[in-house]
Length: 383
Image (cartoon, rainbow, N blue to C red; front, top):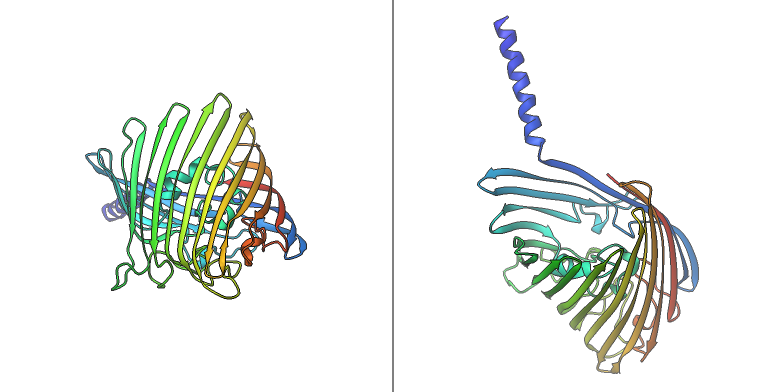
C-alpha cells in the first residue's frame, strides 16, 4: 500500500510539474486562404487559389518563464506555410518566419538572439497598410523596402527597450558568421512614439553584401528581394486615429549599390548591355481606414514610387503608381472574410528592363505591359 501510494504521488508530481512547465507556452496560428484573379500575368489572365495575403499563413509556439525580480526568459518559434498545398514557406525552412530566444526585463528591456524581423519591419512598416492591416497586395513595388517581409535576418541580436511614456526604440545586429565580418551582415535601428491616437515612427537598415554567403544574415533561397553590394533602407511614418477613422503617411527610401543581375526574384533588372551602378526607390504612401462597426472596416492606399535607375547605358526615372482597396467583415474574433484589390501602373522614363513592366506584390508573375490589376476574396481564421 505504501509503495503504491508513493508511486501514485510521484506520478501526480510528474504530471503537475509538466503542466506547470507548459503553463507559459502558447500554440497559435493563422490560416489565410482565398481566390485571386490577375488580369495580366505574362500576357494572360490568371485565376488561382492563393495563401497568405492579408497575413501570412503560419503556426507557432511562444512562451515565457518568470525568473523573478522582473526578469523573464522568452522564446518564439514560427513556421510559415502555403495553405493551398501544405508546403513550407520561406524557402522550406522549418521555422522560417521567426526562431529566437532571449531575456526580458521590466526595467531594461529585452535582448533576443536568432532569426528575427529587422527594425524597419518592427517600427516603420506598421505606419503603412502593408505592414498593418492590408498585407501583401499593398506592398511597394518589388517589396523594395521589405514591408511585406521578403526577407528576415539570421544570426541576429536584437534589443528592444521598455516603453518610456509611449516612446520605444530598438536595434538589430546580424552577424555574417564569416571570417570577413562585413560579408553578408545587417544592422539597423528604429523608434516609435505612441500617444492617444498618434503614432510616429522612423527606422534604418543596412545590409552589406546580402546573400553573398549561405550562412550569413540574409539568404537568397526565396528570402531576399534584391542582391547588391550594399542595401540601405530608411524612412519615417505617421498614423493618426480620430474616432472610427485612421489616416496615415509612410515614406521609405531604398538604395542599392551595384545591384547584381539576378537581383529581383522575377528576373533580371539589368539592361541588356552595360552595368547597373545603383538603383533607388522612394515610396510615398497615403492611407486611410474607417471602422464602420466593430465587425466591419474598409480602407485603401495610394503610393507613388520614384525610381532612379543609374546605368552605364544611361539613366532613367520611372514612376510607379499603386492603388489598393480592402473591406473586411469579422464573424467572430477568430474568423473573418475580406475582399481586396490593387492596380499598378508604370509611367515615365523607360529602363529597358523588367522594371518597365507592372508587377504587383503577390502576383504570380509580372505583367506584359506597364499595368496590372488583381482582386482577391478570402477567408482568414486565427487560433
